[in-house]
Length: 298
Image (tube, rainbow, N blue to C red; front, side, top):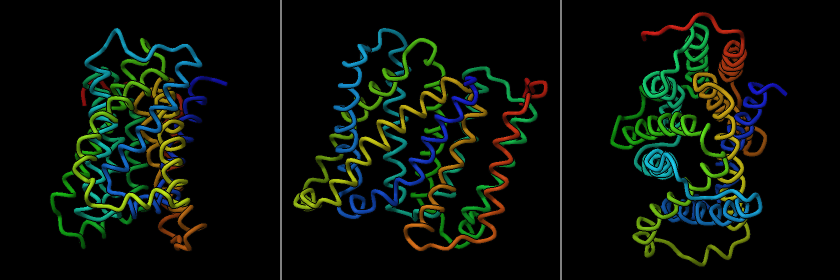
């Protein structure tokens, strides 16, 4: 399988997993505070990843790019996820979905400045087309009109920017470090960072909920599927594709989430959703067509 199609497959798997994350983890999200859930999720994922590294004979601690690898863990896995959690608490999940769709746009901008990865006219067109599609899918225009802009929305914007930044950093170190090390080291650092805010939340919830089978299943899904599997697939895809192409696959997250909401939660799908989905899929196809000459100055 050619590298670009292989990369597309990895990124599609990651985005699909994240699209179904809310449906599969709703019980944990309703009963466990955000940073506590983030800490438990990353702690369990760290154990799995360390065992995987041991089995694969991959060293965990990086000898090169230590500052970049630190930033991946802090900005990508901890701060971006934390900002999104707190933003949801202060604002609304629907508005968060609309604002965080800017992640691929930030990813392309950072790629130009940090990787000197010029975007072709086709790639710019595909990013624009997919962004229009996701605005339609999430009904972002009406959401932005009806919701009051607050601090939570600024946190959503920060989460989107940090995710784009992390993705470009992961691409930058992919030629030097195996994907398993990038994923494991980043998650280990994020686990440490999440520990302190989790301690502050200790008195705000009932730890007895951890005996609930549905909560346990949700946490395991978050740790093993949406962290270990999804982050590995995302980092693997980033290593195989240029960042302008890779960012487009984040738009699939909202599509999958909407479809699962329809199938499992009885939510409705509108004509606007179908139109937006078609635009996003066309944008992904366009991005994989032989690119035109790059634009050096954006």
